[in-house]
Length: 536
Image 1: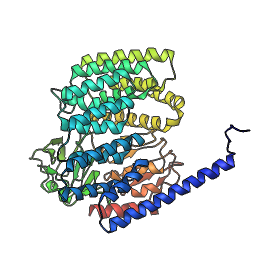
Image 2: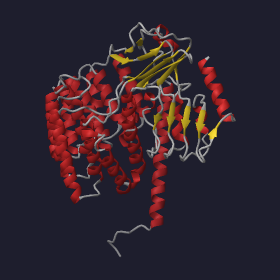
Image 3: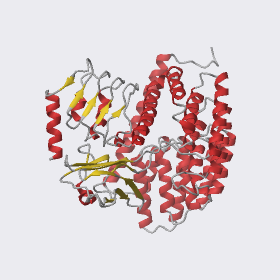
């Protein structure tokens, strides 16, 4: 039996690991105890640096220890140590060692930034080279990509050079999401749109990018990186600040003003100019529709209003950065002024880009013949159709989304919500184009699972949401509809309808079931009380 390695039994191995873990915990507690003793005594010295280095060397994600190291370094700096630059450089080397333990340590990357900002001198180009080295080891380390964007600004590396670096990484691996993202940040700087500042890149460059991304996407249809980048190119991103809707009603002593995104109108440094309603210019008198909020999309004002028919019928918002947004109003009489701005649901492309999109749609349809269940191809085809002609392709788009509910069942809710959003966009367009901006909005029978764009409905007197798939938690957003007098919620999936209490007072609320008109019950009385206090 001599010369043979003894194999530990499972019980012996478990006991050994437990003992080893207990020893590590004991040593860690002892080291932390000593660290806090020195912290209490404000002893930021070499011993503190040594102990923190031992602990961070095995676990670089303890932010407290990095803070203590910074205090030690600042103490050395204040004591006028001869080679303080050497102290900073030594700690740079230490962070490299920690990043070898965990290359995605937030704390280690943050500490490295702090060193460079506080050292007497910093070699920024060396940091750029270090990022290049690290990204060769892991090209999708988004921590390193973030750090690279930080250091290239200080190293004065040109955007063009960084753009070429991104291209090199993408050509090597189309699945490099971080590189696609970085590319989206560089393109608006290098190739801005000449005529429309709201568009990120020029038409000519957009055409090139669409061709590039199609090649990448079709190389591996199941990889999401290129598909997400294409969505950015098509303009499917977060909305930007703009005026959405306004109604000033002297009969109801109520005014409402809404925006495309939430803002702090009362204290955010914004200015309003409403020539036809002088009192409306005072931003401090506007209150958020959702009580207790600071940032809100919809703001209301109570008081005695008089609409001046002789003045300009518009609302102008001036932002703290001097941007200007204008909403035109319709003045029907001295009693009411109303306006709704048609939202941008995506970019409006020129004919050359539309031709490219049509060619890409044809390619997607061809690919679907071979891979009919490719979820990214199905979704991209729907996005392309929406960008080309969302109304003309509406039924086909819905068919794609319905199929995606089965093909990608884990994200069924996402596709249902997306279908709801796009359906509301079409109906909202039709309602605004009809021109009667206080009339009823009919969103019935659309299989809605969510209600979007409520800030554009705030001027309406009635809303029909019957025969959809709404549940109680979907109704909270309806609290912004301060002018809504009739709300139809019949034939939805409501359990109690209790969320309706968050709405202002209605004359009529039609609930689920036999579509019975609820009048004069406790709920409606509560709502009437609420709106009465709001208006008076």
